[in-house]
Image (cartoon, rainbow, N blue to C red; front, side, top):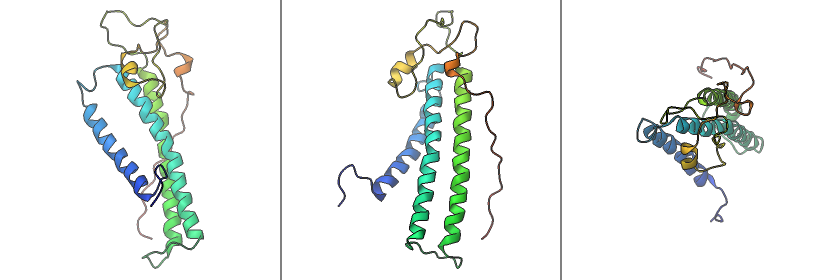
Length: 181
């Protein structure tokens, strides 16, 4: 039996299944009111998705390293006549590509977040002033506070430098899926 708090395969699989379920729940919640009524919510969700996509890079790298360690230790077998070496190598190539896509996704989500930072719901008929409280970064506040905060906006209109990205983002070329061995 494992100690509480010590990860094991069952716990790792449970976390992956929870991630899938949370995405399904988020899709349902963000389908419109009452789960999505303000641009501040979109801004905060984009920030959370950005951070999640950014973290996939590390996860994919760790799983590729695990497979390599298991292969090197002679603990893997394969039903393919090519043996486990080729399967591990191809899986690592695919996970590296997925990690690059995850980084691109993270960059694009951050760009979308930056673009909507100027939006607000005109309840009072006036946009938030530059002195209005800025929306907190994800992880620094609870969701209710984020949803009720004013979005960041400068008097000139564009987002402040604190919310800007570098002007260019790398483009990752798409590649065709592999066919056969």
